[in-house]
View 1 (spheres, helix red, strand yellow):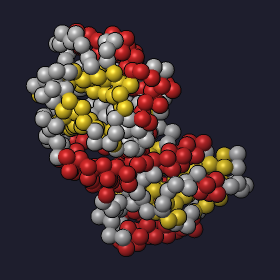
View 2 (cartoon, helix red, strand yellow):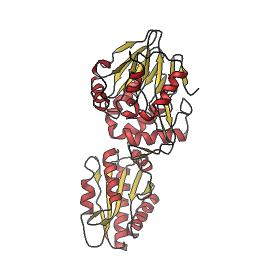
View 3 (cartoon, helix red, strand yellow):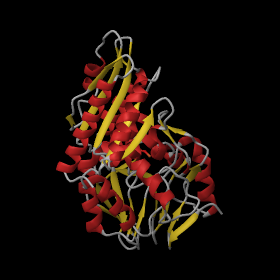
View 4 (spheres, protein in one colour):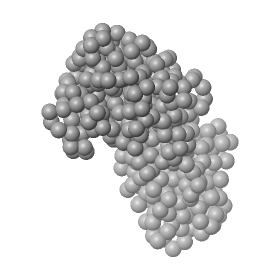
Amino acid sequence: MTVKKMVEGIHWVGANHLDRRLFDELIPLPEGTSYNAYLVQGSQNTALIDSVLPSKKDELMKNLDELGVKKIDYVVANHAEQDHSGSIPFVLQRFPECKVVCNAMCKQMLVDFMAIPEDRFLIVTDRQTLSLGDKTLEFVFVPWVHWPETMFTFVREDNVLFTCDFLGSHSGVTELFAKDDVKTMEAAKRYYAEIMMPFRQLISRHLQTIAQINPRIVATSHGPAYDNPGWITNAYDDWVNKAPKNEAVIAYVSMYGSTAKAVERLANSLFKQGVVVKQFNLTKTDLGELAIALVDAGTIVLATPTVLGGPHPSAAHAAIVVNALKPKARFVSIICAYEWGGKTVDVLKSLLPQLKAELLEPVSIKGAPTEKDFQAIDGLAQKIVGKHLENAFK
Ligand code: FEO
């Protein structure tokens, strides 16, 4: 059996994708991922919560066969993204009486993406309930985790909350419930950093919603479920709501070593003064590792040589990623190496409009860094240390 029983009448019937190595053609998946679908069987009706990536539909169908499922009345779409909704048309084809339960915005997206006929939908409103007999589904709208149509589904009698992408992790479901260990936390933090961090303020409210519901089990749509939800919601509270830490991220690229020397000097100077330094060579780094470091950083420094009058494309890419992820860092700076001019600092600044961070005076270095340049780097380090102290970053 590949299905997994969560509680009486609720089973995991999703699919693992353990050898997938890239999501959205962008996000590295060191552990692969899973697409979690759950079958909720009430005394009268049966609901499927979400589906799976279309290429994994046969695994979903096989899991339903293993449970001997003859009828599905509802397929709930908590989220329209196709890693969860993409197999809904196959579910509708196999179960002709089945309706898609979702909110109005999600319905429009499903119609746009998959041309699902209008008469197959049952549209719900926030906090509406749907009885399955001895189990009741309650729908809780939580926009922007990480699309605008997202909602949770709560099974009242079992106190199980299905949160779609929220609180998930890109890892396989080899065990149904998450372990309270460093590896699991790292996967969850990576997922938060890459997917949820840009929506920090909104998801802070959704954490409060979960606290009010106080579920016994949180079941996400990627990675293992939580039978101790406080473990992950406390971690999110720290990442989302707490002040940045006394940490600096230095993301750099260097062609002939000038930028690397400046970065080494900055890293050592910060290290000596007690700042935790997370340093990334952008030509080699895993984007997810950089994203994880951005979660807690008080300061971000981008360092680059000048190429064709602007930043090295790897540095420009990093700036675009930082800008999109909107980390809570309060300070940012730039180190630029050049020989005959260019607009590197201005271009990088222009790529960071969403970062609500104070720009600390950038350092520009002509040729290889001289003693005067190293002093300027030390000055930048001093400024970072002072700002972190002033703001009581710990
Ligand atoms: Fe896992 Fe937003 O889809």
